[in-house]
Length: 397
Image (cartoon, rainbow, N blue to C red):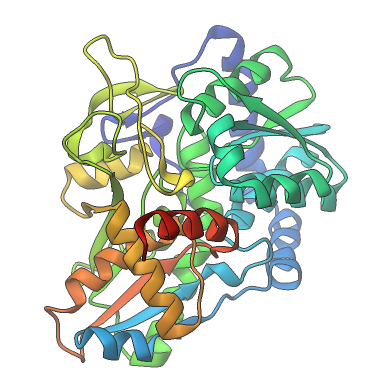
C-alpha cells in the first residue's frame, strides 16, 4: 500500500481545509500509516474480508451476454456479492477499524446511492461504534430501501435539503459536522476524494478488488485482460480495480462517467472529465464541474452514487498522463445495459455499475471473441428496482 507524496497525484490532491481541520486530518494520516505497518491490524482486516465480507468475490464469465453482443468475452468482477451488496464494505471496514484504533466513538459519512452508508452502518454495528449518515433529500427518496437498511443497522440519517439536495451537498453537510466535533468522530469518506489522506486510504483498502481480479483472470484465461472497465463518480470502485493494472501497458483502462439526460446541458449530467475544469472541491484540487465563480455546478445521473461534480485526484492525474481513458454513458444507455444483464445472466446490477457495462457493451461489439473485457460490477441493483420500474413505466418499455 503506497502513499502519494504530500497527498498529491501530479498536480492534483493535497489538503486544503480550514485551520481547525489540519490537526485532526494529520492525525488520521499518521494513524493510518502506523496501522498498515502493524501486522495485527492488517490480519484483523484481512480476516474480516474473508469471514465477514465473503472475499474473494468471484470473477464470472458472462457467456450469454458475450453471445448476445457477438464480440469480446466479458467477465464480471462480482462485487455485488459482497456482504451489503457493493464494493463499499471493503474500505468501510478498514476505516472503522482505524477509527476504533484511534479511540473514536462515532463514524460519520455522506452517501449518495446509500451503499456507502449501509456499509458504514454495518461496520459500525460490527465494531460497536455510533454512526451518522448525511444523505441528500433527493437521494433519500430514490434510495428508500437503503435508508431503511441504515436505520435498521442503528445509524442516524440526516436529510440534507440545501443546494441540489444530492451527494455533493451531503458531503458539505458531513464536513460541517466533522469540523464541529472531530475529537470523538471519524469522518469515513466514501470515495477516493477529499483532503489527504482519504484518496490514498480508500484506494488502498479498495485495491483488494484489483489484486483478486488480476489473479483470477490469469487463472481463467492465462493472460491479462485486454480492457478493464469501471464506473466513475468519485471513483473508489474504479481505483480499486484499476490499481492492479496501471503498470500493464497492454491493458486498456476505461472509467465511465454519467452523461445523464443531456451531455450538452449544465445540470443534466455529471461528466466531470468531459466538461470539468481545474478547481477546488471538498479539500482537494481536482477536476470540477463548476460555474464562472468557481461554485460547483448542479449535476444529474440516473445513479445516485455518481451525481458528484468532482472526481478523485488520482483519476484526474491518470487522465492527464493518458493511462486511463475517461468516457461516458447516458441514462438511456445505462438502463439498456441494466435490462440486458438482467435478462441474459439473471443478475440485477446497480445503476452505477451499468454505466461501466454500457461502455463494455459498446466496445465489445468491435472486438473478437478471444479478446477479454473485465467489468467491475461494483454493486447490486436491489436498491434501484423501484426507481427503474417507475422509469420503465413512464417510457412504456
